[in-house]
Length: 299
Image (tube, rainbow, N blue to C red):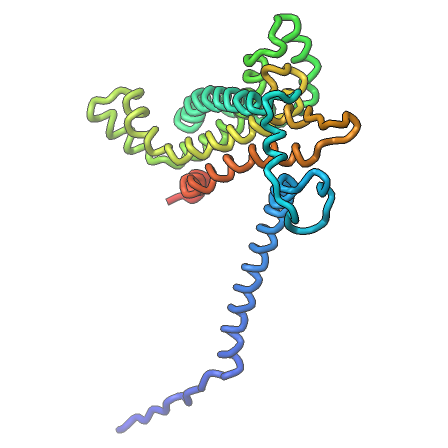
């Protein structure tokens, strides 16, 4: 007895459908690049206009051309003039001192706090986390008057500690939350292995876990530094001419006419502040991205 089998007829792919798939991919790629281009233009257009205005002749400050017709560096010279009413070079140094000290202290306190919150289970852990979150959400404007009164009473107005301590309280929650999410995803087996080899908990943390957290530490330090440099409200009330950072110094720029705002010099000052930060981010962008994405996906 023989059994005959019939093969199902083979269907050829529809050429219309075959053409649709590459077309969809092309449209998706074009849409992706268009969205990226829109975001880049939206983010960089104000920076570009600031640089262009800084390079214009002061008489052409309000020109609408997309590039300076008579480029000049006079605005930068005016901003950095040591004989000007506002010492911008001193303000740059003040910003570095304030932001550097704030970042160092916030990173030192934040790394140990984040380690404790991610490594240990203790009573009140979530309460502490809630307090940190609440501190980060507190409006800065509500703190201006009490901090001004407090620092006036103890004689700290115009001193660096009056500018550094409030910034630490603002930057510390960001530091703790960024590092906590990273520490939570670290392989704790490596720490346990170091403990079994005879290392103390401190040695295991310093020699094993801390090097693994280097990308997150670097990213957090940059974010904290930039956030401190950008602070204006409290700095304008708690500083004086000798300790004013760049944000306050630019707001105090005056031109030859006290009734005319020197926009070109202000843009030059903003460019001097922006360029080093942009260069730093471009140089260390890989570390920043690795630190921001670390701990986001569980293995």
